[in-house]
Image (cartoon, helix red, strand yellow):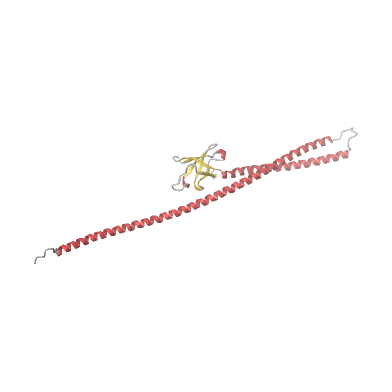
Length: 266
């Protein structure tokens, strides 16, 4: 029988071949989709790992910043305490100098008194043939009294001289202590930075008490960012080498950064 007009006749073999072809295409897409899913899963895992690593790095950086802020606060407290002690030492030094001046004045007065007593002893020596002269007993009593006063004056002079010497030594010690502690309050700014040779120029110098081999803290907006080591000093300026190991990654020293005296390595 002939097929009626308008009816599409497909052979079974053709249908089977088409089905197999479609199944093959579907299998290929399935494999591709599976590979894509695995790639996406791997990418997601990498992103998650990177995110966790970044969070750990951020937490570590925050801890480092907290430690640096604590160290800076401790250093600032130390500087404030040193300023207070320097002021107290200066006040004590002024008091000692005033006391020393008073003692020196008193010592000079005692020396004058001793000179007068010496003259009095000489004047009280008996003169032969002087009818108006005092008796021997009176002269002896006056001489004994003058000698006693002279001995007392000598003893007091020795005590005063010893005390003045002690005060001078104490004054010298306080001067040295004041000079050392006052340095902890030295602060200035970085005027220029040479990145090629890794050094900076400061607006501080010998007149400010800066010495070679001194360390300076570098602050920016009140936050510690690193250290420098003074290599040479002029009257009004100084050059310091940047201690790169103290700088955080990505941080660079800039003109205008504040520097604070931290001590000497000499």
